[in-house]
Length: 79
Image (tube, rainbow, N blue to C red; front, side, top):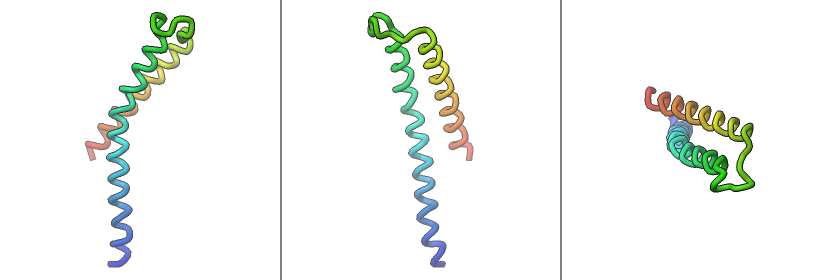
């Protein structure tokens, strides 16, 4: 019974941590997608705008991030 009490706290922390990761995964695309968009806009960035390669890499990484976060969310809620 003593071990169960000690390890039970780790289970709660693990569930809390997973829940926290899901919440962060909701927020991250709202930061990354506008960042890529704004840094690729010549009207906003002027001479400091991203080049084509940087923009393409940024868009691909942002899409990958969104897809992986959606998978995390689906897995978290499916059990």
